[in-house]
Amino acid sequence: MANQDNESRVNQWKTLDKDLKRIGRVESAAQFVARGMVAPGVALAFIVLAGLVAAVLVGGQPGQLVVIFAAAIGAYMALNIGANDVANNMGPAVGSRAMTLIGALIVAAIFESLGALVAGGDVVKTVAKGIIEPTALPDSGHFVWAMMAALLAAALWLNLATWLGAPVSTTHSIVGGVVGAGIVAAGFGAVDWASMGMIAASWVISPILGGVIAAAFLALIKSKVIYVDDKIAAARRWVPILIGIMAGAFAAYLALKGLKHLFKITIVEAVLIGLVVGLVGWLITIPMIRRQSEGMENRKKSLKTLFGLPLVVSAALLSFAHGANDVANAVGPLAAIVHTVEQGDIAAEVGIPFWVMAVGALGISVGLLLFGPKLIRLVGNEITKLNPMRAYCVALSAAITVIVASWLGLPVSSTHIAVGGIFGVGFYREWHAEKRARELGIRKGKPVPPEERKRRLLVRRSHMMTVATAWIVTVPASAALSAVVYLILNAIT
Image (tube, rainbow, N blue to C red):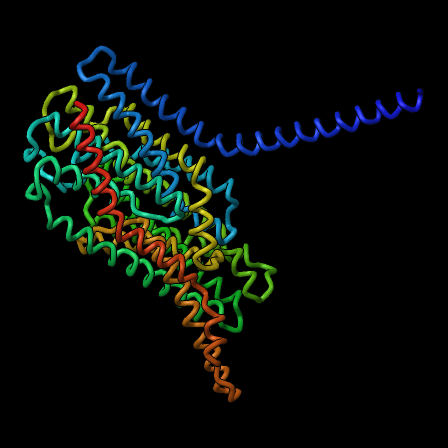
């Protein structure tokens, strides 16, 4: 009898253990699912909060529901800009290990918000830089739905591109959205096709300029610093010059892309500002680099340390300028909707209420923190291997390319420039590595076989095709989405 009781107890304990293990597995599964839902949940809460803020601030006014809906869509757009576009500024710094992912997210969030709020501007063009003529639309109601459709379509396309792991241009996304809604609302004649042609040209101009300039600086560093006998002495001479170039380039870049919102500035004035700041930066960093390089070993690894801090500073400045410039992609159409609903007319330019700017600035930062790591890892690690010197060349090319393009009057995309710079650095490394191998093989009488050359490819071709395809289809895809959204909105109102 006692044995039966003992066996019964043992069986009960075994059953209990099995039940507890099942419960433990269910809890683990629930925790795993919950972790994946945190980011979308926070994003949804931010969108709802933006709508609530709009409801409080415009409560009781005609068209209140339209403004609330537009504020929610603007918040959604800002989240997607942060998730996709900001990765181009921080990816190289993270990929080169000059910054940790967490550090990059914090720095980018701070400087993106500062750029948007301090230098984002209080006036924007309502129709994506003259892509369509507002007067071609039948009335203000159609204009509101066109802006709403453009904003939602651009946000949806950016969301899809981020999910697919493709860095695309937010400017091109919103332009495509405006074109699609404009064509459906007012016909093909409402679109400024000359401007569209320039935008299409930038698909090629931006990455090529960025790639060529980044490769040129990498070639300079390799020839003057890396492949010399006394690397430390060469670094003491050339690193301050490169930092001076960076300081001057970013001073001019910020003047053109950010400070222009605070006061009028010409390209000549921006370049003069850059020359002065660059000279000062060069003189200041000469003794700093000399002190930092004391006791360093005469090898390539030592040189990477000298580029770490300048790379972090450049990434922060890129984020500031990006926040100042691209916040308009999120809040421009929203500000146009708010103005049109409140005033009842369509204006070529409108003022941006502070709450609208805050939605854009905070949305970019929140989107970066929640969803940015995926694109940061792709841009920084998966296209080609980066170190601080290569990443520095990419950051420097971004600033210089914008200046050159502004001087030539060419529209360029910061996304295309940065990613093009990474590809430029990678392809130059391939060419340089094969050249050295070929020279070494000729000296030893052993030419490099084709299969060995294939193994030395330093750029992932699959990512190049994915990115190129995403760039090409961005405007048509967002335009098609916008046309559909506009038709739906027009049908239900």
